[in-house]
Length: 333
Image (cartoon, rainbow, N blue to C red):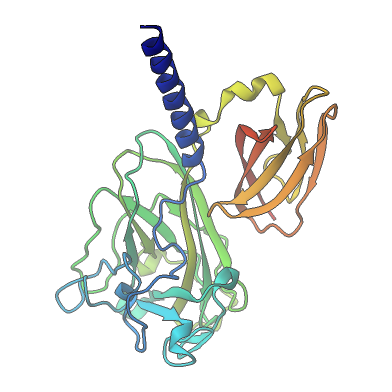
């Protein structure tokens, strides 16, 4: 009987450990499969092949279906410098972000025809109701002739199929680029990001311009050409609800300030003389950016990360190799 009780306690302890681990993991797990378009089933030698990078597809019904037809593009180094090569292709020149090999591409604006292209993906899991999610992706202008600000992400329970012959999909995106931030850069990748509270059950993410021509804002300093094409890379959707951060760390009085910041911040913590630890900083894709040692007896750590781009990052505090806290960092430049 005693052995049975001991076994039950052990199983209960393991379940608690697994639950805590799962909750912590969910704070930084990217829900977007093939988020950087590195995986493909066929090398794209021609345009209009976004479905070659599964599970991405185009919601606009093209030639009667979405599973093996599209007008949205997939670019990869395997195509060399051909029509859809990386970095050189028939629409411009751009390296894949973060040393990758692929990215997507769509027309966000073509006013005379009210022409729009979109890319859509099924997330790895449905979004939780009344919980916050952090979203970001990067775009780069191909032409740089008519930079627009209208670009966002729409989340839906079912696939957002469109039968309007490549016209504007008239929905309100939960995350959208600021109206005063024109996406005109042809050299660098530009961040589109934001947070939103999910209604619950959203499983599909669609990226594009959801504004009609009359509401599409064009940079007045551009050449005035009405068509604008954008490359897209490094898409992430991360569960980042503050209510899920471990509160047991209050005993260590861990705070990070200022937050938001431009890359310079301070971490306050309280370890006893026999406790050591470290703090890791990761991006929304879960990739470690840097790590800092936390010395015993100290209470303040200066963190300087001037190279960080604007966006959302995470930090994890470890004491004696055990994670005791997870938090979010917002970088604004």
